[in-house]
Length: 330
Image (cartoon, rainbow, N blue to C red):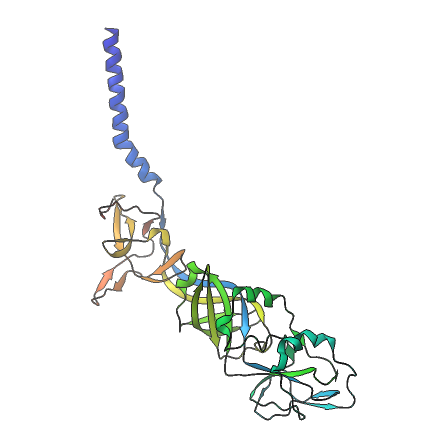
């Protein structure tokens, strides 16, 4: 009799356990399913990078010894044939060691004439670093990430002496037709850029609008080249600088990318309805930073031009939805 009661007790216990599994576990799973409230806002896609400035530039050296009289100020845009500086007197007895390495790097690329006249129109600057010959618009394609690190250790020299020796740098002319910015990003971020699109570049002291000239994947990194024809006070001499590149800024409903998936060829998310059910809602992405995305609110136009109802602010979004192999909603 006792054995029979024990078997009945065990049976009832198993029934209760199975009932708990059937009825309680799905409820607990639903409670654990993470959601968040969709909000309307703006999303900025920004890259903070170390960049190199490339220009079309020519260094002029002193044709003779002399004490300099600078006729043109730093940053002035000059016509071709302008007398930039005048040398008088005895000048320095020996070449300035400060520029020895720079002159070696420049080789025969320097210009000189007895009147210190610029041979081409451009902006005058009294700064040099030796890379004027090696890196220019024609050699951008050869620029590598290793070169960027190498240049980072090079000091830009100010031509601020009074007395010069023949062959010392005395000024530089930079073509004002355009300049370039080169930097490297992870390959996973290359999709954020598109050739021909505009971006905004923030230097430590100013902002300029640039255009994406090229995007090239090289091994584990992507080389981005921006072109610019806007005026920036230091573009004539700064070589390497930390910059912030604003790729785009858009407004709409902000979603976590983990929430977004594809169902039957349609991009969308799962929303929780009042019955705590997962309901698929189609979306259209405006832009992304690969972590979050901005999507249209309330309606967007489909391929046929007809409006499609979509997500709205304050909708409850399933954070990490799972789609079963059949492609049906859970």
